[in-house]
Image 1 (cartoon, rainbow, N blue to C red):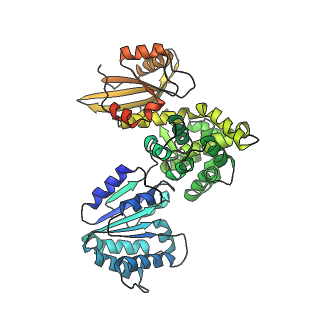
Image 2: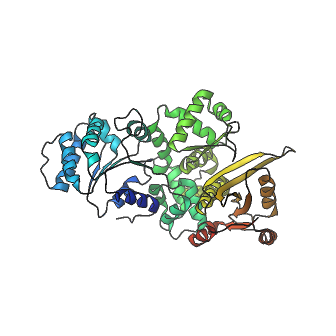
Image 3: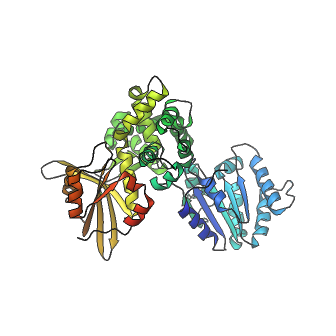
Length: 468
């Protein structure tokens, strides 16, 4: 059996909710393979529980699974009990704390049209007066948001807690990659993000780039086909959405550019982007401290999508070699250029981890018309002051030099609204001696890739503040 990794905050939250010892109705949702089932299985260990994993079937097969769970859990003969009778039996057993998990709830609801209404009646008449801890879990994001949490749902307003389970951040994802170098961990995260099922493919000692070559350049394997499968699961007209995604993978970031490149009319492209943002595959951003909507950009926030569409599709002719080994070498050679955005994401997450809860990016131009950009900005309020951390991110094979800091300082001067400004330069390949001397004199943090993956360093940086 695989050992459970990470998700300490989510487990703590579930256990805290469970300790209330009153009726709780918890909705857990998130994309496929993000680890919802593993989290709930870990949560129920040692607790009085029923666990039903619904299947995509027709007829009363899922009802039979619920009967079996009741039989095993309560040592009763559920026979041919109806759904209402089964829920009633569960209610009888909930005088003491009982956890009922229905995993893949959308499958059950699709196979039994009366399920939602039956649950509504059960909650209103019996469960809310019990100690039942009810968990409905699902991977169909649209269904869970509309049919369970939405205003039109029979269950609307009855949930007491909800958990949107996101992919793990870079440092938690690294726990799946014991023995790997910081460079390897970063590249794997850049290729597949923080989804446990994908990360497990890179555990062990096998060359990570050979795994990428096989998974993304063999059309029959999971990782290459996964993005389209996710789109087909959630959205109609997947070809239009694929066109929008391919436009972003080719570097288009403004709505007008994405519309022109994809051939999708602007109103439709805008709607598609909103859907992709809602599903977590795309991020919509504006320059930090600006919310006027005039400089909105869109980026692929899902690393699996970004890698698949950029490396495995857009760059396929350039990267695909005559052998898997040659393809692996080509992928490794391409990674420094590809990893720019992924490395910025890693640095953004690091900034959050060390105590700056609000993060973003900034771009603009100086009065002389020179384009300027800040890769990551973190903000925190302390002692009546707003403190900002401004970071420059370099994932190149060269040491970061004085120009990196000069550019950062010049750009940071254009960002208003901070009482104190801290500075950091992040670099995959280290720093020149001149930059190290200057950074020490000016209290600028220089952070290497190894530092980012060192939990002790992360912990030390939580207390880091640079005085003005």
